[in-house]
Length: 302
Image 1: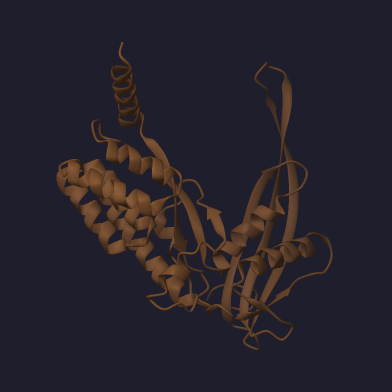
Image 2 (image 1 turned 90 degrees about the vertical axis):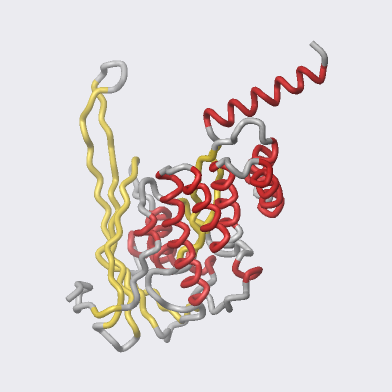
């Protein structure tokens, strides 16, 4: 077989594989803090100095310092109390894969976080946190990751699956650029893909994902609507809703970070801490933020 025919056959096989299996692309989006504070707010962490409470406090402070959202001072405007920290371990009997008796050991780490304005005992935010891990010691870093993601704006890392239509090399090129994180080049390639196959909904969908990654939310919505118009598909209609949530979350985070609406380069510099999205977490919960609100002494909402 001539070399050019072999090359063409290989390209066809790649196209078929991409079209049938789909490709997972990793993207990021911005989520605001749940507590409604702005960058530069001063914070003081309060907890017991010893034991598991002290470990949680030190790890959480290090996590928040790396985020750079808060200033830490002894006479801060806001106080973050870490209370009721406990660790419990239990053993569950069972049978392993070869039929022998075995046991599973799990450790649960819990704590309560209460954020209050100084000298205002009934104004703040309170929430219980819990992680369950295997092993002898609860995962303090995982617990503090979860707390920190609520207390400061951050980036969520998530994936979406796309299917490359056969016969459109621009789509495949756009996917390769996306996998490499070269989003500007991906945007140029997918634009050519849509021009070459204007009736292909997946090309419009991929263009929407790329434009959304670049935080061009209005353009992304148009792309998703074009895909939905060409082919009624739950992925496309869900993408429209998700795009709205991401736009709201990014706008609110921009306000918390004291950035203007035109501060795009600063906002998109990937300096925010990043967290992987939890499995099966609805977007509506990810972007639901809670402003400081009234709570009863002891952390209970009225």
